[in-house]
Length: 298
Ligand SMILES: [Ca+2]
Ligand SMILES: [Ca+2]
Ligand SMILES: [Ca+2]
Ligand SMILES: [Ca+2]
Picture 1 (tube, helix red, strand yellow):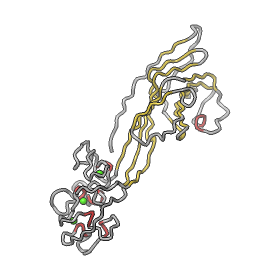
Picture 2: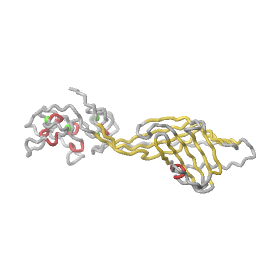
Picture 3: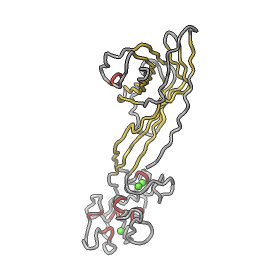
């Protein structure tokens, strides 16, 4: 697994009162509040609730983007209609249903409200991708390490490629019984999960697949020896220029930062140069399946 560190910026707060007689009632104390969100493309709401003083800070985004599934940083302009920020104080405790229900609850009601129609909201999504193939991540570009290198050239870096050498036998299978000492069947060149001809008989493992079902494990001429791709005495070639389906797990973290925020109501305005709303852990989780496109390299 890759570990990511997130730099939390300090929140700067300045309050400019339009009327010297006003009592400033805002606390803006959201440091201990978790950032939460609900919604879907076209209608997202990010919010923080501090029920010690019954206040909330919320960001509404009407973007049609599907958030949290790609590693990127996207900035949205607050425009007062589809995209805006609210700070509110209520006459009682507020819950997530206030933000996430199609029919918001009748109570609490809003006592004080500020609206930001200008500024930006930036969402930075970081992905954690893992092939769960039994080989620990290594921070390296070396194509023989479980890092950013792409040994088989299928477009999937080794760290989330569950078949690192592209021979259609998954790495987890090729490691053998002791992942600390990966199996090397032919005793030569690379260990099996990094070797495209595991028995060194001159026929690529991928092509020791008599029934062309993209699984060399089930093509067995001599059961006592095992699959043909591990039997140096069987060298039958069936050209298979195709990869099997790959899968990897995805988990994302998303950080939401507001910049140049001007929250206004009739009485005063609150200026926030940079306000880190927070981070949503596991904003998206799931399994990605895809079949890499095969390109002939030899
Ligand atoms: Ca690869
Ligand atoms: Ca891998
Ligand atoms: Ca291999
Ligand atoms: Ca072979």
